[in-house]
Image 1 (cartoon, rainbow, N blue to C red):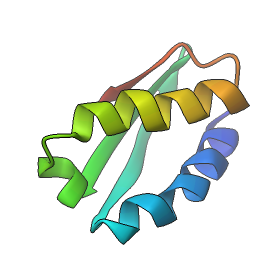
Image 2: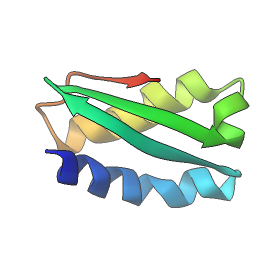
Image 3: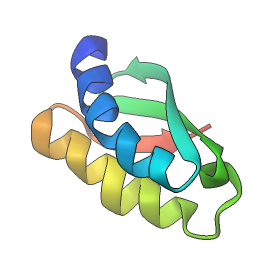
Image 4: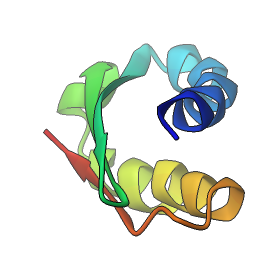
Length: 72
């Protein structure tokens, strides 16, 4: 499952990088994906929205086993 998650995150990276940020996969365990937002995304006031409405939705759509995404 980790490889599938990385594939989805890789498809999202250009969008995040265009705004000066990025996402790092920390862990995948029991349907929970743990990521770290870096660069501009790490301090952006919209980081929670990016995490839930962007990254989490994309992962759930591509990998139904994903329950949620957490920022660490």
